[in-house]
Amino acid sequence: MLSRIFLTAHPTPRLSDEECAQLEAAIARTVNFDARSIIVRENQPLTNCTLLLAGIAYRYKDTEEGKRQILALHYPGDFVDLHSYPLKRLEHTVGALTAVQMAVVPHDAICRLTETSSRLTELLWKSTLVDAAMNREWLTSVGARAGVARVAHLFCEAYVRLRMIGGTRGWTFDFPLTQLDLGEATGLTSVHANRMLRRLREPGILTFRNGVASIGDWQKLCEIAEFDDNYLFLD
Amino acid sequence: MLSRIFLTAHPTPRLSDEECAQLEAAIARTVNFDARSIIVRENQPLTNCTLLLAGIAYRYKDTEEGKRQILALHYPGDFVDLHSYPLKRLEHTVGALTAVQMAVVPHDAICRLTETSSRLTELLWKSTLVDAAMNREWLTSVGARAGVARVAHLFCEAYVRLRMIGGTRGWTFDFPLTQLDLGEATGLTSVHANRMLRRLREPGILTFRNGVASIGDWQKLCEIAEFDDNYLFLD
DNA sequence: CGACACGTTGATATCCCTCAAGGGGAGTGG
DNA sequence: CCACTCCCCTTGAGGGATATCAACGTGTCG
Image 1 (cartoon, each protein chain N blue to C red):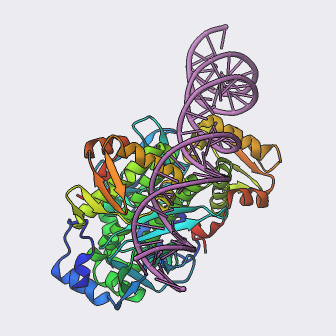
Image 2: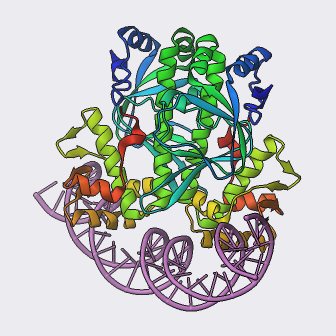
Image 3: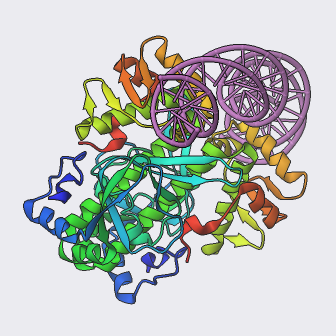
């Protein structure tokens, strides 16, 4: 039952067994991608969506000056490019951060779902809008918060989201980003991201080494980040 | 026929007469707001969506340090807070930039629409996703582009969107933002936004005075902004 | 062992912010 | 009609945050 994983981060409203079966039936196949490979190229016509089963995926845009902005991180259970169903293409690139396994769901299968179940449609719609809410929170972070807060915020979000899907061990979790990635997600250079990490490490608030993050003082981290999980719509 | 205005910026696919009538029937009433008033407060339970009929609305988040990030601007025809239907609340504030007139569409009316027409549902869904694509483009701008490019980008987007709905006169258009607003939309201070405007004005690329923008060199403006309208999904 | 990617740190440069002052226009009240 | 106020725009000076450039260490993998 691959589709059980969908929305594990959003326990309510719960998918009924029948809805889950419908979703399951929409899955055409699974597919694997290597770490750091491209899953979907921007502006290509699409006929499938992909549900992330294992690994971490990310979305980004490159600018002409050679900078990259990471737009979102995706964990197992995320319907990474569901928005390609109404939009028919993506205006950004989707890549695999680690090796990933994905379930392929053809657009016409989703179309059949939407004709069958308006409740399931609404849940799918909602999941794309929670992604959009995260986009807006990142926009706020990058546009209105200091460097150290942006870095702290990224770790707060990662911790909460990973905990929802059982991806944490106490205050520790795997977070396989390089410091370059960290910079590209927060609008900083890798050098400065490194310095912001030091400012979190030295007072024992957060350590991050070799792709493993460990939170030493959750409350302080949240304060620095101005983190409030209301934008994740976990309720 | 108030609902004719919906998606005027997105001519394809075209709403059928019947779909338009269905949407029209979903409108409960119209309502007006003064300039600079709050339309929807963040995190309040919502039971209505609002379609913007006249004026300019905007969405924003305030940080604890007293900074404000403007997340989006909305023009007539935009379904400003349609995402409140699946989400039931908004994680940001919606305000009126100018005096606005809005059509109120109750959530349960939208629910009936989604049970009736999966095609209309998809169009509504799509419109929320185009908003999300704009959120991501702004994120890229704020995170990865220089100040002058961010300001230029904002004017490029405004011009293209306003032209779609007949809101431009040649290369001139009303754009009733203060320079403080401009800064809050681009992640700059108003002082620096002012200086970026000067850098666009002096070579004759763009003038902006008293809420009226006038483009002198569209191609240069696009180059500076790295503007490409593909993220607006106008096709 | 060599190549390479990543992390760390220092020195310097630049962008953008902060603070401050003054000007102009619109609205208001005398 | 004028004075006053307030908001917004504009400009200058100085400072802080972040970028750039550079060097070196470390671990991994072929």
